[in-house]
Image (cartoon, one colour):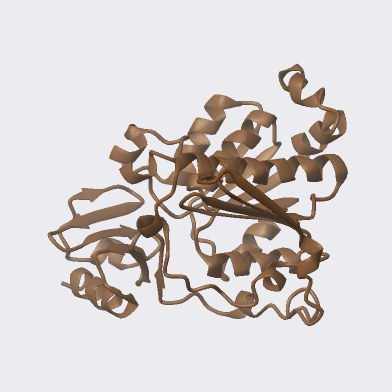
Length: 326
């Protein structure tokens, strides 16, 4: 434990916090800027078992803010979950790291919870629909989780305990802002500060058995930080934490989903990974890549297609079928 001496000397964390952290199974959903940065901090801090969940591959545009990945990961099209596992174990070989190269959906989130028994989940996703799914799963299974979001120069963090208030109290409906990092951009320090605050809440919970109960927002453009008592958002008629209605867990995944960065996720039969007549420029056991003057397409072995170049969900679905069913 001498490796963690400096953090154990911090009275707010101490040996109690370190003991809890070293035994904790923490599931991180989404391994982009937030999830990868949080995973690195927790690996260095000695988290017992990190379960890393992400469906995506490393791209060059990730590297300015996703600091655990490198140019080799991007050029080889490495799966983020596998690449991050490799890097974390080089940082700390004493911990356990499990890579789950799957999209988190209503079809697998409860299976993964039953399989790994996480004591906490960290949100590193960029989709509010996935966050609402996490919120419902964590409430049903009594798992504390930490919401994090960042865009441009702004970040938001709140620890959500299953006793409420929950994400549905804060946001009654899924936001449709139309903004993502490909439009509004994202500064590296904003992502890392948001992830650091998420990890601070992890350490609060490990040491004290509770979060700070503060909704933290900040804007680095004006160096302004604001905090609000999360209890103020409690909804006495919340469908999740009051009425226990877990509709997202019962709903099948959407056939087409708009992602961050102008991309679209389209689901196709898994047989197309081997049967498609499209001439791919890059292939691996996990994905195949195609690019022309108009589109970029990545086909994954589980039937997921990530398409760049479409204008909307309808054109994305049509384009994918025209390309793959040649």
